[in-house]
Image (tube, rainbow, N blue to C red):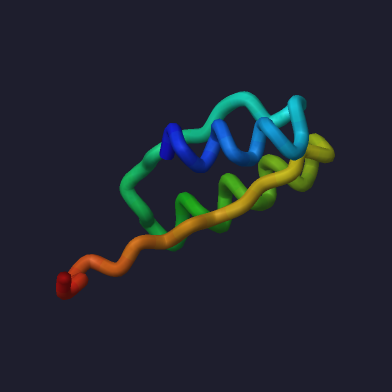
Length: 53
């Protein structure tokens, strides 16, 4: 997460933070609407649970 924020900040200094949360479809929908109502941008990176390395 830190690397992503650092790289995004290089391109757009207004991007200064991010949040890691447990993904719940209802929460994602609520947050998306909350951000939209306030004119805030949002992006979602959803990690798969059963990754193989």
